[in-house]
Image (cartoon, rainbow, N blue to C red; front, side, top):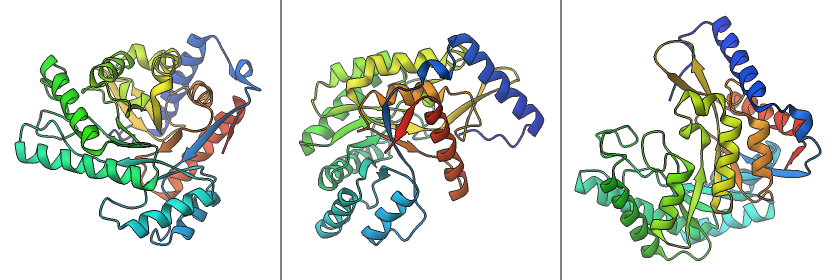
Length: 318
């Protein structure tokens, strides 16, 4: 993911201001039109405490103002430990938003592929045991880098492989409450709301849901400068299927050719009032998880920014 250290602070601030102004001008709507919405969002992110004690772990989330959490244990955790964290989350009013299964289930290397599929199965089983909303992975890559671009990623054959692999994971676990989901990527399926809908239809499993990371799908100037409309499109098409969301931001650099960098929420141009308003319409049951930051202070700043934009849009937080 991108860094902002190679541009000057002045150029960076100018770019942010220009991007935000362009987006607000394009939408034709300010924050006033979205106030008094009565909507609720469940924000979450990492906490920096000893994660071995379920009570301490849960209390740290409440102190941070979070209503959602990442799964605190791995698939190797025993039933007693899983049950203790599940109870602590419930007692604190937290939802466990997602269990990560980060791996490459479409690798050309058969050994890597089999290992990745097994990790997904074990992670989905954990999601079911701990009461998480979903297990999430990316679809993977046909290239050497598990999450990188490759000419074969966006092909009919790879689409079919993703469908077959996803079915096999869900069928192996047969989850009753949790969902298996795929985080969108800029260069792998699903890379748009429409390709996600195609996958949902093709996989044809009730426990296959959608994971929304809009920043990963903003891969062109059109989507960048009209991301308010793109966000609305995502929720219009995927809303009933969305089980968890990611919170980050995106910044276009003023140099050729197109350069789009992932940045901390508040340092880019993503229309958070629209994002939070649309997410709030789902009823406060879907976790919005901050990710990919380096320090506790960064996560605190991101959360403050998101809450501030939410307040301006009339959105409250669990």
